[in-house]
Length: 107
Length: 116
Image (tube, rainbow over all chains, first blue to last red; front, side, top):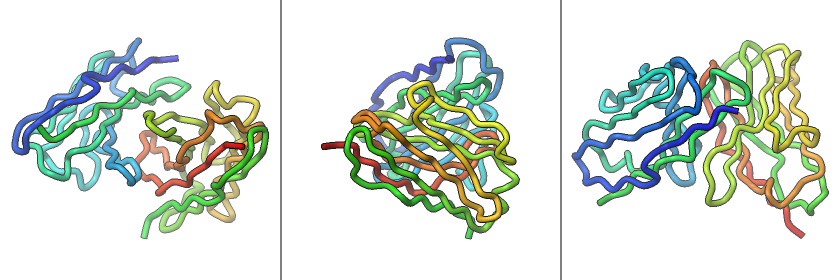
């Protein structure tokens, strides 16, 4: 099983600042990596797939990078609606696995 | 409107069974692989099971293998999850998700609580 490790567990950021979230895979997943946002009480929402492609309707302030085992999600200027939990997920191998999540909170 | 709607959650005793359903609308669900993903209280997302578009191939997380069965009825645009021998650690919100191959459409979830 591929283990996905996200860091940090919690990120405190002020509105308007940049946030950088990391995700590491225990073995290569090529570019088969997605990022999701989950706001409490809501379903997860796909942000990024293929490591760097924004999903439909996702604002340009969200960007993804990386390949192999190291990935990054960057939110260039945090808006109030961006405070949430973010998960990475690999879909290169079965079983599909998620990282433990990074909570982005208001500083 | 393109959406997924789960149903069938509830309170069940340890060792009991429950069947979840997920109705798809606004798109041809038979063209896509589908999955169940859960989130336990205070925990992160956990992939549970997946099924190919035709239903011929199924996949399970080790934590549910032998206890849960995923199936689909493409004539009804509906996905199912039969859950047997339920344990307290199966308590979670269960989401169905369309796989393409990342999960680009999610339902709102249905809560399953396993408790005596």
